[in-house]
Image (cartoon, rainbow, N blue to C red):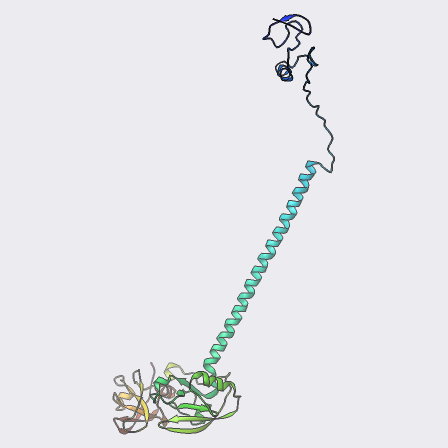
Length: 328
């Protein structure tokens, strides 16, 4: 048993409060706080005889926050800033999209213009030689000339009144030089053409059937193709010779012509007495030495008209007449 220091009454050592006065029995600050936790109604103050330092809870102080530092105002400003930021981000994305679309459209238009220009250049590059010189160049391997002969093979004439025809250049000729400059391929021919002007007359060295001719050709405008008749199928002549035709030489001389490989039965060629293997050298007064030129002559001949044809059977020259049919 112990004596309560407050009222002097006896109490047990296990009691936390005096049974007479209710004063907590403490020996340390921790005991005091623990006692108050279980008995909030316990009297305040320092127990008698206690010399330690008691714990005193801080008294909360509430101050009115200023408007400037208000968390509500800070949140509102943050929302406004976020909205402005989102707006400008949206505007930047929109501008980027329009810029990309504009650049894409511009590139597409630019590409279309470039393709059109390249197509025009490509078209002109394949048509300027026939337009300017009046003949269609062909493969030199089809000419049948010795490999030592280098030049441009004249596959056919464009028209009978073009620069090549007026200069007496014929299908099957080989253009060796123009204006004193050797012409060994199509690129060199284009390069020479780029140095010539419309209406200019240039010297042409032409190889024909073993001899070289010096001819003069007047350059036409490369940008304008010559006028050619537009013929319907029934307006085109037909001889009945079957393709492929082949350019070949005449045995025993330097002449060249077009060898007939076959013909349709009862065709003008069949009824005119031609046979497979015959070599046609003239058609209606024009010399023909390439399959393309013979086909062009036949096509331009009016149906039901009579034409004279010169051909070789072996090394024997023969002449006959045909009545040209029409294409069905």
